[in-house]
Image (cartoon, rainbow, N blue to C red; front, side, top):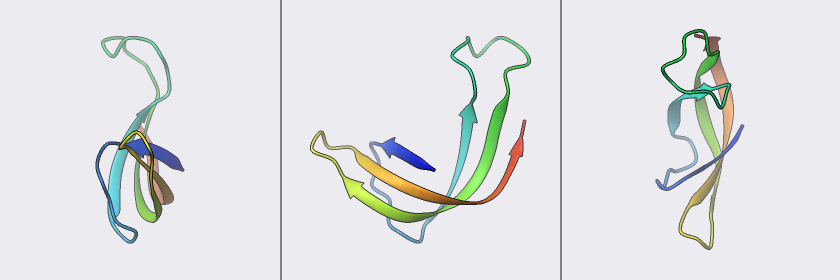
Length: 63
């Protein structure tokens, strides 16, 4: 999985993420979400000050 973030992370770190699978409001019930743990395999600084990170997902589940 590739993400952009404002926080610097290092390769080898483990992250926990939750991804909402819809553009609908958070207050609506039944919106599928993915919860996952992943290991950072790559980090790329971007010109706007953000970071691109590549995650290898190691465990996930749908909420």
